[in-house]
Image 1 (cartoon, rainbow, N blue to C red):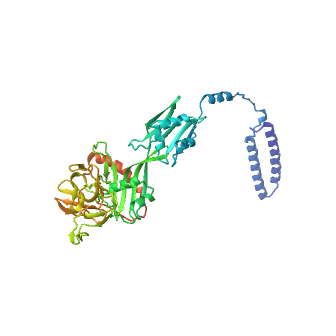
Image 2: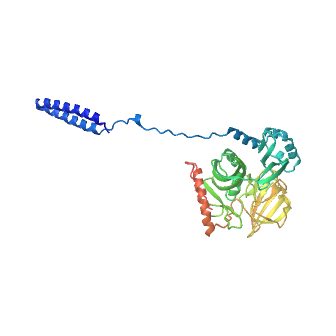
Image 3: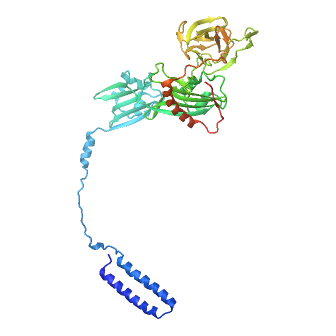
Length: 463
């Protein structure tokens, strides 16, 4: 609060001023009296404000209470001793280079350990380090003297289960183990445009070849990749990749795909219901199976050199009905079974050369002529599945160049394989369809993000 003595001095001065103003006002004109009255009011307000205005605190008399606390400083000598007792390890990472020897690889890894080198050379499993492809990652852990403590790398043994080679020191000895790799699964989304070929487009979009081949398999019953592709066709694909320690290890399955071909849009999503003992498959987004009974082409990439029509026979030199479709392709190109069935004939037949005939159901059969050779172990009576390799392109029999002569027969009567109508497999129903829709909804959302705004309109192809 305002000090009492100061307040008395201020009020005394203000009182004197007010009395002086009062005398002056009483003898003045009306206008002067009004102005004077206002001044008196302001002065009185000032006296009240002075009485209640807080004063600045005086800190010179404030009590001071010092606090003292001792802080324990770390014992540096104890820390140094602890570090000396615990062994120090160093980790180095390198990639295998073309022309690497064991010595050069270990040297780059900082390993100076002859015992370790001798073990790697003598142990069958450990020796696989030197069989790694260029670019493979190798990690080594060493002590301060360069002695090997642990070395690890992913094995290239071609097995379905990915494994890591681990070489570790146990006392004075080493041991080598192959342990299952712990992989991180990622889902990648890519899109591309056809300008020249499918593989050129997938390369430009940084899509692995394994994914491109899966795209062909997915849409092989709807798109003939030998003849149907058009410049400007678009595709979107969602697929798995597997990583270890931040590096891609392998490509997984295509989870969904979309292909815009010649104004039609074909869509597929992978679905494997746990209750389906037959395994998974690709379906349209409405739950209908994308897999038709027959492939549109027994070859993945080729061109049609002769169609199903009357033609001048290149060898006989006369007009003759061509009862199949010829697909030109290099010698050795794999030939796939167009549908599930049983091998009815394997051997040579006149102008067909090496030929395979497969019986299907309801009077359907297919024939594949001019093969250079048959698939290993193929024989009459053997069951084959759609897309199984049954032979390889050649030019045996009456052929002027390497190609596949493909016939589609109904009750032994030839039909045009490019126009014959065949049904799809059975669609999903009931609980399977309900489970499928949950998977399809996620993939549809992802596909929507991949579509390019302003791209040409396409219609959803009828399944």
